[in-house]
Amino acid sequence: MSNDKFNNDLDKFVNSLFGNNNNKKKKADEPKDSGEVKEAKVVDMNKKPINGRKIGTIIGSLVAIFAIIVIIISNLYVVKENEYKVIRQFGEVIGYKDEPGLNFKIPFIQSVTTLPKNIMIYDMATEEEIMTADKKRIIVDNYAVWKVTDPKLLISNARTIANAESRMEEFIYSTLRTELGKLPYEEIINEDLSSRGDLNATVTDRVNTLLSNDKYGIEVVDVRIRRTDLPAENEQSVFTRMISERESMAQKYLSEGDAQKRTIEANTDRTVTEMISTAEKEAALIRAQGEAEAARIYNQAFSKDPEFYELFRTLETYKQTIGEDTMIIIPSDSPYARILSGYLE
Image (cartoon, rainbow, N blue to C red; front, side):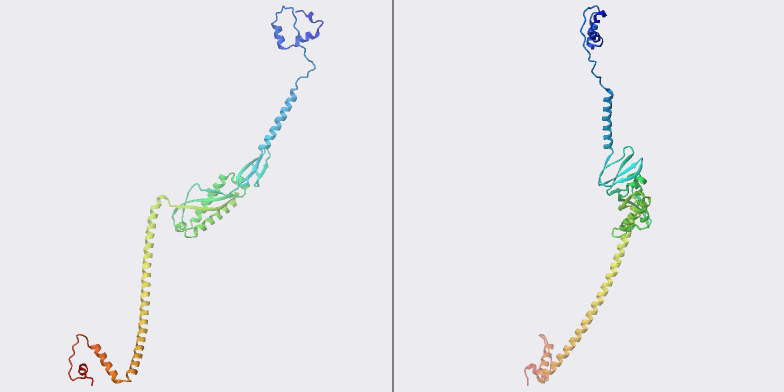
């Protein structure tokens, strides 16, 4: 195509150079030898292009704001009523929070560790074998009630709750071994004795002293012995010896009971004999006094009529000597016979 076609029309020339792709495609499809000229679109040279740098700045600002919000939210922590929050800075403990509420830590510098604030129960994982004062081996199973008193000391010296419990367990077993070694087996297993109750308080105080000296930041509230057992290889021999001891003790109690019984019976018999003797003596005295009084009354009464008294005494004699089958042989002229025959003169 000849350039003379655009000599007097600059717009057509520009349009032909900067037209859209469709026009270019169509122009490419046209035969080169075609003499027809297509009309090109006009480009607005006053329109400003899009500023990519400004858009990037806006997007970067939004991303930065979002990152700041995420960092702030991720570094907020809540302290609950039943827990401590220990703050570390570059791994070193700098303090702790125990008041409930919302707090903030410095991002990337500080970290927070949670520790329980409530009272906890630690069940000893292993059973310890201990030798008593009378050289008997026993197995002790116990548990401890404890709490955290200083989270900063716990993290600094024990590092974790598990380490603190491990040290506490060592102190408890060491103290139990010492204290139970001072007591005989019977006092340990006998609930009627007060030694076991005193033992719990003694072990608790001693363990707290050891924990305080090492600054572990925990306190044992109470140590309790759940049960005491004998080693399996010693159970039968101990049971046999216990049965023998109980039988000997029972026989001793029976012998002492029999002795006391005989003593009580002897004392009772002696007391009864003394009471009977005293009563008989008093009865004889009263009887003698009564007979004397009766004789006096008889004498006074019969002395007033001697003949009547003689007759009365005779009749009393008959009453004593004559029965249904009584046979009396007397002279016929005797006064006794005359009275029996009815002659009173």
